[in-house]
Length: 553
Image (tube, rainbow, N blue to C red; front, side, top):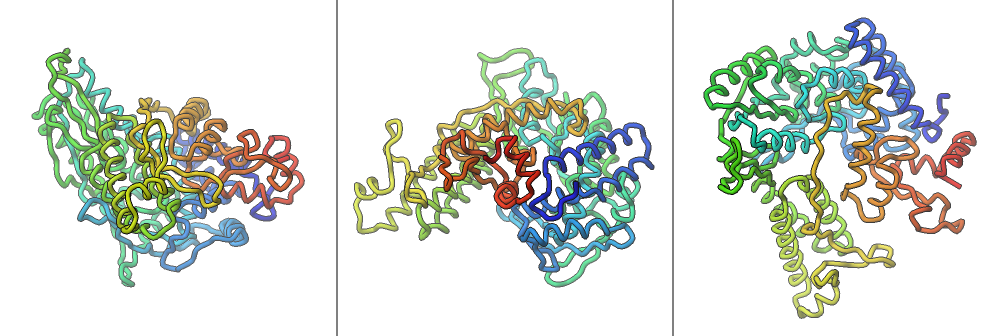
């Protein structure tokens, strides 16, 4: 049944419908039926389910309010539903992609990264084609490629390197670090148009849209903008096959356009692997900017981590010379400390609960990212920096008050520690405390299997990974984390992952105005969009289904 308004959309059904269509595309690709691929892709793009989910994905993420060159943003449910209906009339011949708006964002200290911001309409159309293209990209993917892929993360890259380089039987002790010169702006359009299995007219319009920089239009004869919904998938497909190219003698892991090659000798990496990589990239209009070969005892930085084998005579075994450790890189630690200092400075005059809330979000995110490696010292160092920064801010803010007064007003005692920053919540009824990063429990990451998440045979495996990730996540507060665990990481309304980038809200099964409590058994964690739908929907059939599922009473 096609909904008559945005609140009536059955998101769970839409997810199932999209999954069926994506599986059909995957099956057509496995049979090498290019004609069937295009037909099924077109069917997906025109389907109400895919159009609805594309609009929701674009308008619900954190960059939803970022405007393209047309200055248009879509926030109301009426506008969202109108856009869903309009998408049905878009065809390769009628569609015209608008230029992206170029912006510069910080990359590393002293460096900026260009991003291209498409219009809302272009983002939605690209998301539709991402839905249609990603099942094929996953099937083509290198076995040790983990960037911009469903259910994969940077932790998979890290644990793979740790397993290979830290194994006492491993003979590959040399690492070739490679940087591709201007990857996103440099990929050859001719190669993409020849090798990407999607409608070529649409793809060419994406690629040739151009960009606007300081109100000046610029054409694009090569590459694609970093920041577009389909760009990560195109990037992966451009580099898929790199692992096979270098041969079985070497090992590779890749995250987007960042990759390292592992070999037995420095000479083999430079004389055998390096030329093969150059030839592979040249066909795609790319070239290496700089390379470096290091022995693991020297250590190297990759993806914000530092990898190194430390000499220890008590741990020598096989080819190991000691203990192999992975830590947060010094650059990332310093970068995060600067971010903390900046956050405190910018919120000096804000209510304390605002500052603590912002700090907690940043601390939890950093801890979640690095808790799978040897991070205890880094966490303690960051905690000490946070304490120093906040204490200095409070002393400056209350120049006339003594230490005892500040201690009693802003700090509380937990487990023998009397210096835990606290404040009352905005409701004035409960207490909020600063997240204690030194006490984060370290968690071993399990390397992801190579299966395709769009293949029904692998659904159960990736469901288990999602559930496990939810069980150990620390990204949310205590109450929300408990709900996340209970729900196994899924939203009961749309059945999608709760950690997909959308805002989350707590839903009362029995509303408080009707006597509902704040106990966990009366609470559900929902996407903000899903919560709005549950609150506002007047469709009797949908309401009946939600009652049956225990979402409402």
